Length: 208
Image (tube, rainbow, N blue to C red; front, top):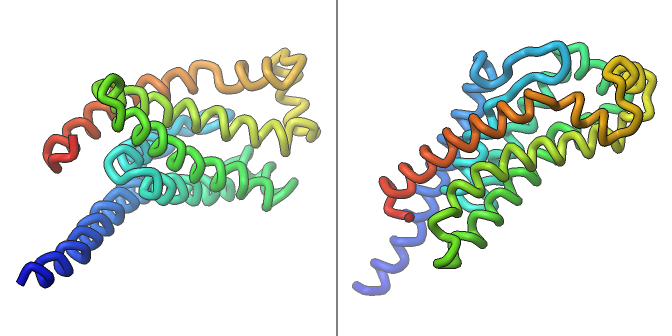
């Protein structure tokens, strides 16, 4: 009887995990098709999709975070077909555009999950783990995305014209000027929302 109980526990746990992961991905996809997902601006769109990615990474671990990040990235890649900046990126290099939008977001979710896991295992940092991971997610999003953008597209005529218009003499100044207030807004909103949501879910799911 003991053997049967153990063999039933694993499938149930896996099923619950997959259901929770599917729900997080569904939330990301749903948000991406509403103004909550992407707020259009003349340059980059302000995105709140870092919130479900952070929550997924915290609640479901690094693998779950990577899947949520990949879902976020795929929605971002699809946005490339409907925005002027995205269309420019695609016209220069579809592969580089995919790396910039999808691969970086997958790494974002993975790294966010790893950061949370490392902090949560240590009793001294456990109480801060939700907050640090929630802030790390939008910061990683900005750093990874902009690093890839600069690597692949900075020397193109389009981006050079943008840099000149912003008065940016080098890549670092361009990143700061291009991200500007947008990056700060994303970081603050994700930090506040994701930390509260993930902490609440952890208590509800008894994972704290």
